[in-house]
Length: 117
Length: 239
Image (cartoon, rainbow over all chains, first blue to last red; front, side, top):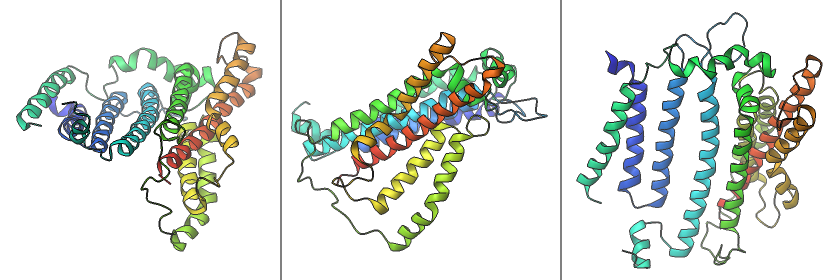
């Protein structure tokens, strides 16, 4: 059955939807960043799943091994993880700054103080 | 926010993605397009062309070195952004009377002892992962994270606040820029040797130099990454 063979991709989409749900349904900025990180992790799982080759080992040269996994998704996701750490750090620093300025990290309370809604 | 609206939004995002992945090849299928184009060349010739048995490092530091150069610039820029946002010099920036956690509880002597006891071994492991990154699992970023975690642990035990940091600030600033500096140096060396930025000499008699260039990049990434993790931690701790 085709569905069961693609379960890695479906799990990744399910995980991304959990992250997306946190992102749109919560007003707390820290929770939003956590949701965004979950969404990001689901993309990592999707890419790493694509790099798998049946019966392949890690893409490091070993005598007597013929089948290796695809190194390209590993490199792309290594880059993405590092950049993800950087963007999360900047987001959290901005949240600390918002907390200092508004004394809250709840989105609706910030809008209330700004009278922007 | 209204629950039905959220459910509709999620469905609208998930259904096209599920339909999209249904057309993808099965994971592990060796004939999938992802494995047959440039990746096949990386597997076939990567170790021979780059001198790195670890093909991930070969792609990271050789075939896609510009990408990695950009990546280390991104994390350095992220640290600069965090420092700028958290700096007391920024207009309306960090208030000195901010109700932070303060100096906090003194750390438990058991925890402090264990951290001191394991620190040399963690440092050795981190250095091993960095220096052997081109022939075995590991690399600059992975080893840098290990060293960064060690520095965070040590700053918890030996931390003396913003007045007396672990490392002198000017030295720390240079070490935080270690990765972009290593890439600039090796890139210019490659330019001088081969005529291409970040080019590696391919002649067999220069293989030792090629390996040294890769190790330099890995060490730069490792030290820079570790210092950036420590820098982010110290900027965020709210002391």
